[in-house]
Image (cartoon, rainbow over all chains, first blue to last red):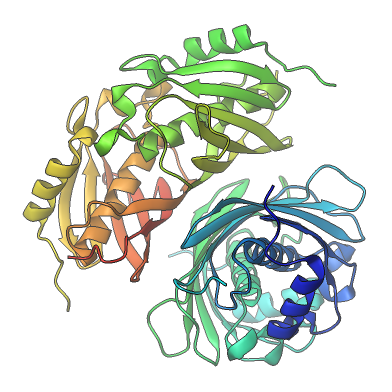
Length: 145
Length: 145
Length: 145
Length: 145
């Protein structure tokens, strides 16, 4: 089994350094586990992520998925600040519960230039996904650590 | 030519009423024009929408596109609070300039149950899109005004 | 555990009846297993599905995925001839080997009006997917058996 | 205004040479016009492209869109046999009429490594699209003519 290029702690430290903006308005994204091409990321319940009626907003779920895919990419290619999302497609499946959202991510491909992955989002404690995302990151040539 | 179900002013008033959360952290989304199945929406430059290096974040662009699609749906079906996004797919094309993002939206289909549209996002003053979005809204039966 | 609405044999018989066109040019799609919201479908190697160099064509993989999603939908809702694809999104991940393509499908949501699923496609004997598909079927109201 | 890298006649000749498989079962795809990053391609009515009830099959429309995107890519980058589709997303909007399908394609981005475009498909004589496609081609480095 291949190890992750960065441990959970290294990942968190690296992202805090290059990505401080994601915690604006309050820290809500927490990396819980990292493997080689996989991760579990939690989005803590927070008013900034809500829609009318108290449900989690679509853009908040997209932010979570985009972040989780980036973590999974870094877990394979190492510290690459300039990887960028080229495509992200989300299906909203069910109304989320009030509370945390937990995401499970795995890369379907970790190529030299493109990494493709999928993210399933769950309301905590439920095993039926509230949303499903596929996305592609482009990794600049010569940038892998 | 068919008129929009809501004028620009009616649209803005209606969305402020049912969607106050979108202005959290500062009002950045401004509806500039509304037609039948079309709209132009501007996202004002604001620190809350930035990524490292000062570029506009992907989730901020997704929020803009999701909002603009909702405006275009309402322009056809009228006041329907319960329309929900079922699918949203975004291609990121170019690095945005620092500044406002202007979006142009048109519905490709306005069906009884599903509305599908596309959104092109531009850095102000440029005619090459920074991102392109297609999305689907589900409209509840019997909800059209 | 919930049973499939149709057994593998019933499914095959039903699809041959309502969908004879898919076997035009030679039968290549074979349903190997059906569960409640899941299925395994094989596309046999056949010249009609090739691209230059002997690799499987993209449209052939899209056909397989669309068919497999339909089988998974029928496994939940029963005999519904009028279910239609509303959205299909495919990521091509690796060059397929010459030979059969095996697909694994599961529904992420089986709603009253919309069913959403994902399909992973593999070259036989490999566990790295050659393509990944998400798709949505719209099920007409009052059509469920 | 920039000229297309290949004229309509050069394009047709080149594709016949590297892609003879697409005409298997009868020639149905006809390039009608080519510009720099744009094209119009017609799919002639043919039994091999039908679904039950005489409507055009989804996979036939996906084939048309994939082919049209490839033509638009070649119109910018020239003769590049190894460009491959990495992502294709289709929204089916309306039931097509019996008859030809006409497609209009334009590239949204023609980058050094990735080309992204959109395709609108119409039943001949109608101005409401039956389907809309976005897709990405990956162009191998050093392959541009």
